[in-house]
Image (cartoon, rainbow, N blue to C red):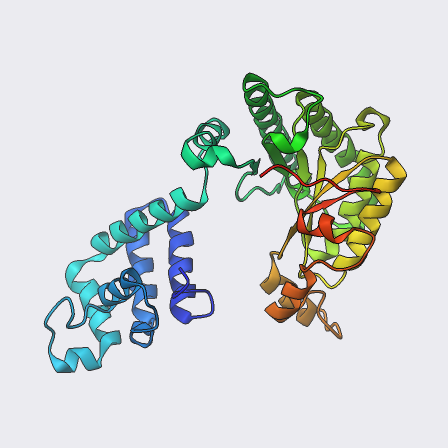
Length: 350
């Protein structure tokens, strides 16, 4: 994955193929995609760029050069053409099977389960039991109110499952939320027009649903974290978060969390705002500091809108500095432990 990262044409092609194959129901179309995309890459330039035998073996497998098969010199000089001819000779089904198998291996590594019950069961196996997880769904996003209602119900079921699992393993409703698993929710999954232009309507319709999920999580003694969105939704997200955590029904509960993206240039101000909010409501807020997502979209949107600058850092080093402990309304300890709290901090359990 490091060798064929998204900084290389091959990495982009492989990722496109892998993601696209998930959405293609029939084999004929999948075969056409493989034939069209995998023949475009320059695999040869990756040879010898990794110390990993597995990476180099994979590269040779993709190139099908002399280390695995004795090919003619003319064929070795034209890897691009050789790979296209290979697809024509071996057939897309073989390559399709190989790509799908690789996706299963990657999926098992990075996805805890296909359902919340499956994910919870895996979280208790082996070394996984040494960690605490905040479970979220992949790819959620509401296009209609029907979608939003479905995701709200999915979140309800997940909270019940996580909460019951917590209680069954000795957790308490008034216990330390960092000692149990939690859930992450995405606001754009709970409303189809989650945008600043619809602010008043979003606040009216969305706050009750988010508050309900937070109250449900509180009743089980687990954490509930609001995931991050695109830059132009940050202020709207903060409005919703403040409306929810300020509700008297959540008084004293320290399980409400916020994901903050460090690649946004407004991150220090966001942290200061959340620290001030925590002081005003009188209890701790969980803060998960992440690098950030949607980078490509943020850059392209700023270019399309003709903005004088970008809302996110364009160099990785700047994002790294943004995630480093630094003086602010949150202490350095809080930044390292991804907790922001007034006026003292606690280090969470592993």
